[in-house]
Length: 124
Image (cartoon, rainbow, N blue to C red):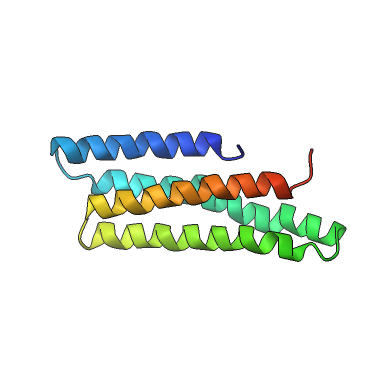
């Protein structure tokens, strides 16, 4: 899949957060900050590059293909909104369980996004 490396890093950091939470060994807020940084630097920045570059190139080369990428762009938007929600929760309540739930949903969205993207994009 396209984002395998980033997904593996996000899952590893999520495990660290859960261990810290389960062991009760201090505040996991710093790790949550690292998690949102990872989402922003590895997933959302890549999404922006896709939208600014690859998607546009394909849309120009294949008139009428714009609708193919509407779903992909919406996935990116939803992931960005969810990263913001995690940051807000981390700053307000710090509810790690809620953050982990959102993060799990984001990973599932990304898996589905990757599958759809692989079907939509032309073979290299």
